[in-house]
Length: 481
Ligand SMILES: C[S@@+](CC[C@H](N)C(=O)[O-])C[C@H]1O[C@@H](n2cnc3c(N)ncnc32)[C@H](O)[C@@H]1O
Image (cartoon, rainbow, N blue to C red; front, top):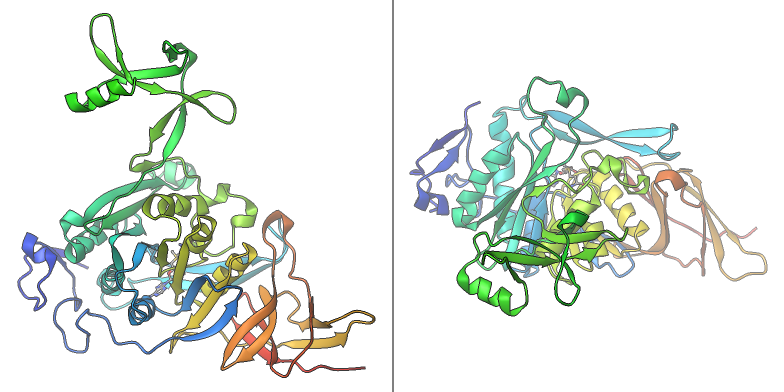
């Protein structure tokens, strides 16, 4: 498979890459080639998606469907130009099919339910890597169209496709829109990687582009300072110092006014960095983080309760860093290759709103359960043509609670669903009034099988979410002994 860089002369749609004279060409490229059958933006027309499940305030949204379905839904709702951050972690062109593992008895050895989650094989399809780029490029373009004037798009990849996607984003947004190529060390250099006869491929790449007004606010980290390097100013405040580097005279004057310049007897200028204590009481210098991220541990080092068993799940700390430096509280975050919903749980924790999409029913079920476990409200829509898993057998019993108000609904079968809920059904939309999800990690526990609800009305429904992403719904009738 040959991917070529060529002069862009044939496209009918003038692209920002044309002004730079370079763009990627791959066998079977139709994207932006003015082919018949595609909309002006290169994506096929989509039908509206239907709301079908609501829990709580529905602050976060999951669309069961393709990236295009989400892009078109937001556009229809007038949200084009309103998204502060698009983060996507698409398939990496890894030539693998991925399986989700639900550990019914927690992280320890025990019963595991394995379900195919999504495919990332391209060599067997006609077009190979070209087919991958043909899938990804128009979807990235549709997502960039949603960005606010200060918005950024982050594309999470690795060595296989990051270099190609930079070229695609150059073409979509222009080379000047490039902000960063962040390297995240996702694994230690151990085992097969360390003995592979090359440097270990232990890194992922985050390619970041922004609209013209985009500004990131990188966080700081605390770096312990050796006692011998600590000095004190006239007021006894501890500091460490470093040469002035590339600070201009004007900047030095400003720092001088803040008491942050230290001059040696010989007149050399150093910048003072006042120190703060970390949690262990050690004096540290605050350092702004650069584009090399070695301090976000891999998922396997995260708490067992964070690990959903969804393949290629990313650590929540990584998404918290991205969302924290690219958005403000209340901001709108989109992840259209959502997987287990890491972006949404991080957005929820930081007080941002998330809109997710994923084609895989397993991903949608996993992300929904995860958000509800974290106490977030979620609204689920389903795109026309979304692939749904076959329904499961569902058996419930109801009984009056002797001497107490309300009714008891018992889930008889399936006995260990990923999640289930009791609610009402109106115009094909299910609204939860009670819900339960399996607990993960060391405190793994099946969802409770008994729900107590005020009363069962004519449109009361039980809905069960399975590990294979199935959604099974049944009306329940009140039964009296
Ligand atoms: C690498 S995983 C994302 C993992 C996620 N970041 C997490 O932390 O769990 C990629 C996801 O993209 C989804 N996907 C692949 N092609 C898609 C498409 N065209 N539209 C929507 N989702 C897609 C897959 O189902 C899969 O869940």
